[in-house]
Every structure is written in C-alpha cells, then in structure tokens.
Image 1 (cartoon, helix red, strand yellow):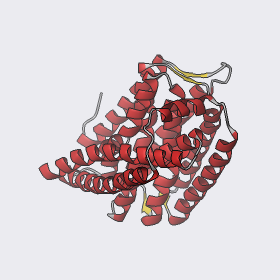
Image 2 (tube, rainbow, N blue to C red):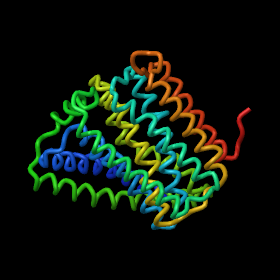
Image 3 (tube, helix red, strand yellow):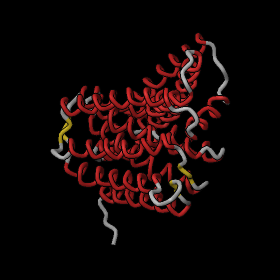
Image 4 (cartoon, helix red, strand yellow):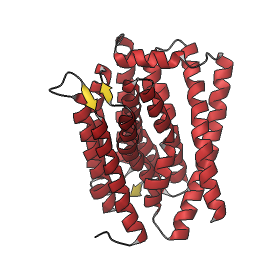
Length: 328
C-alpha cells in the first residue's frame, strides 16, 4: 500500500513535469518549422496538455484496466470544466472574445453528444473507438485548414504572446526535449496506473472511481496550471481554449485509443451518472461561452463558484458510494 501510494505521488509529479518538457519541445520544434501560433495552440499545446490522459488511458487498457482509462477520460472532462474553469473564473472572470473558440464550443458539445450516444449501450467497441478516432482526424484536418485562414483572432493573438515567452530552441534541442518528455510521460503513466489499481484493490473500490477521482485530477494538473497562468496574465481566451481543446482530445482520441486497444463494457452508472454530468457541464460552458444575446461570452466569478459547487457535489456523490455512507 505504501509503495502504491508512493508510485501514484511520484508518478503524478513526474507526469506533470514531463508534460511541460514535452510541450516546450513540441512548441519549439513547431516554431522552428514555421507553424503559425494558432496552429501551435490548437494542435501542439492541445495535444501536449492532453498527453498525460492519452498515455495513462492507453497504458491502462494495455494493463487490462479499461475502467481506469474511461474514468480518467471522463473524469478529466468534468475536472476541466467544473474545477479548472471554476477556479480560473473565480480568480478572474473569463471573457470569451474569440470567434475561433465560439466555433469550437458547438463542436465540443457535438462530439460530447456523439460520445454519449455511442456509450448508451454501455459498450465501447472497436467500431465505436474507430468512429471517435475518425471524427478526431476530421477535426484536426478542419483545425489545420481553419488555422491557416485565421489571422487577427483574439485567441491567435493571445497564443502569439504566450509563445513569445517560450525560449527559442534549436531543432536538435527541441527534438531532445520532446523525446525526454515522452519517455518520462510513459514511465510516470505506468507508475501511476499501477499505483492507482493497487490502491483500488486494497480499499476494495472500483477502478472506475479511482480513474474518475485521483487519476483524473492528477492528469488534469497541466491544464490547471496553464489556465491559472493565462487568467493571471489576462489571456482568458487561452484558458477557455485550453479546456475546449483538452476535452475534445479526451472525448475522442483518449477514449478511442483505449477502446481500440481493449474494448470494454461500461456499467450503467457511467452513462447515467458521469456522462450526464459531462453533458450538463458542456452545455453550460456552451451557453456561458457563446453569450448569445451578449456581445461576448462571459464566465463570471459567480459562474465559477457554481461550477466549483457542481464539482464538489459530484465528488461528494462519488465518495458517498466509495465509503458506503449516505448524506441526509
């Protein structure tokens, strides 16, 4: 038990640290190759911040622990919106000015609903996973096309300012950073998955609950750090863009790759509890971010407080099941 707890703690620390190294190397290499700041934001940093979820879920499936993989993906979606955006908005209200993000919001809602439909039979098959990966491929192709046409969007300008603060790396050094980051990501993911499953067995709880809580929070730490820093700098479009991109990655390739490796049955609670929470939170993000009758979308401090309450309430419900006690 002590060794498993140590593996989770060290795994999480190295996971977050190696994700930063990987992102810095990938962004540096993309800059050296002349990729636009917007494309780097959507593709490179979007992939980099989701690399922990991707590798943890893939390794969980390889280790025949698909419930950890699914819990990690869906738990990260919930953590990203309710906890991370909630904390970020509480620090500084988030104004959504970017037309790019307002286009991404309905896409996120759409892929969430598609994912819910595929999960409605409580099975993630290889066919379902292939469809998710196919949708992701189309999304990436569309993002690349869109990124080459968008010039002075607020999100692109924020991304340009953010990249200006990253030290320029030579192609060789950037490639080395990427390689080291990837190796450490894989090793720390393996340690985290092993420790999490050992803890689950020790306490007699499901792998799903561990994935939804400990693993999901841990793999979402890069998004938390990125969003808080963006909010403090006033680059609120970056904070929202980071969450939207991460949730699209979680919903499509993270679940898709895990399901391709090991198709798995999901208990009815995954659809009726966890997926319904994701849909509710994604819908609220869509409504708040799009603004509709307002000139711009706005996530106020009060909205952030409500998101945090939703996150605490969801986890309290999980803990109620975990410890077998009920709240009056």
